[in-house]
Length: 345
Image (cartoon, rainbow, N blue to C red; front, side, top):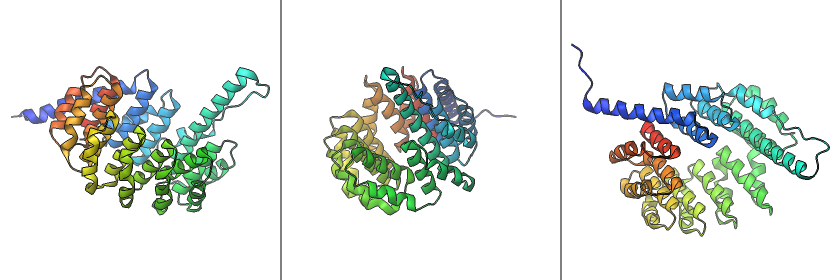
């Protein structure tokens, strides 16, 4: 005699099936940003369905979707995106020699966009730890585009070339804001914990985007020893910095900062409150769940989308019911966040 599964098992399968239908919907969305979010999120879902979806996304019409799919795959140990990334890295925008006026401005914009894309492709190739790529990276360090050269330096650092990080550390003190930002973003990608102090120094940078980048870099190397320097940024004048500081404390495992994060649940900025709730959850406390539930009932799409994704950090079974309900949201980004939270859990 064959017995049917228990109601609890059947319910779980039903929820997972519904979550996967949302992921499939996202991967075929007309909005490339939604497809990007989907392939980035699938990095944290470990099953055959996720791998197959990422393999299909290597052929997406959006080149950024291709890059993030290749990155998610290699972080799972699957090198299938290597050739896709090499093709993207070697593709450059040719500028008409006679371009002038509005045409010249358009050509410049296209060139900037292509340089950023090629830089991201080569940084992702560094994750493959493939010695045969070293000559490719060294050749790219002579590229005309600075973002490609920076990407190649990051790739070499990921391959073990310690000299590359030193160059970026020295650039952290540069007077030019753009140079400092490029340097800290490179160190963020390298995840080199030898340079925690120089990265920490940028927490007091006058530019908000640089302070936020420094927070991400410190979180990337799990620099728990920096948590006391990060905590004051929970009251920074800039909302993005406060949001990133809350998230960073969660990534660092700074359990002793839970009281500070709980104070941030009263922040006037909803995204800061959501980040704090998620961080508290990541540290093992479900105290912030009501904050996420309130955000999911708001009219703001960004708040709902971030709250839906933050549910995966909450160590409480009530999270499953809330995420399941959110699969019915009217916005695909919100539904995707809930689906990923369910699949990760």
